[in-house]
Every structure is written in C-alpha cells, then in structure tokens.
Image (cartoon, rainbow, N blue to C red):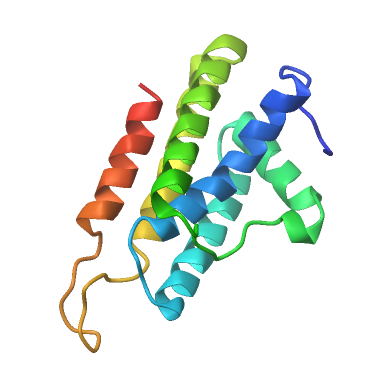
Amino acid sequence: MQGIDTSFSRGEWSLLVRLPGQVLIAATSAEADGARRTVAEGVAGIDAIAAGRGSDNALVRRVVGTIYAEREEDAPAAEEFTDRESGIAAVIAAARVASSVLVQRSAPADRAAYRDWLASIAARVCGAARSGAVLGVGGATISPAEQRFMDELASAFR
C-alpha cells in the first residue's frame, strides 16, 4: 500500500484507507434501490470521498491521497453488498476498530475530522436518491434504514 502514515501500523493504515469506500458501499446498501439510484448514490459517495482532499485536516488529506494513489481497480465504486445486513454490520465493526485506533494513535482533532468525513460520505450517499418515490414524486430523501445506518456509524465513534 502506498503512502503509509508511519503513525500507524500497515494494517491500521489499510483500515483507515479502506473504510471510506466501505462506508460508501454500506450507505448504498442501506436501502434496496434500483440500479439508477445506486449509481447516483455511488457517484455522490465518490465525490464525498474526493472532497476530503480539501479537508483542513492533514490525516484526512493523507488518507484521500492514498486512496487515489492506489491502483484504479481498488478505487471506490458504486455497488451494494449482496448480503446487506452482514455487510453493513462488518462496516460498523470496522468503524469501531478505526475509532479505537485513532484514539490510541492520533490527536483528538484527527479522530474528529476522520469521523466527520465518514459521516459526510454516508450523508451524501444516503441523500443522493429519494427512496420510495413513484415516478419521481414523493418518497423520503433519507429512508429510515439509511438513517439507522448513519446513526450506527456515528455511534461507532462515541
């Protein structure tokens, strides 16, 4: 893996770099959508990950730089978990581990910036396509299932 931050072990850095893409996939998976909505959510998530390049926080910028320095096939993509429940549970578990790693190895400001960046990725993905709309009318911007995922992600960093 390119660009390992020496404050972290190889495995810890890999976790921090992979988690944003996993959050993107979990957020697209939180609500069963059609292909068009999944793509819209995926694009919003990729944009949200890339927005970390402009973060005021150096750790977030280093993570984004590492994400985009890796091979193209490892770049974040618009997809869903085949087993939604276990996929989302695995991402929440990984977020808890990442939170613990950041408590042990970084400044509180780094942990807060990383947490907020992940939350912004989830929010942009979940808000990218209305759920339950009929012919584009009605529906919720964020479904109860999407809100539950965002709440669980936030609680992983408490």
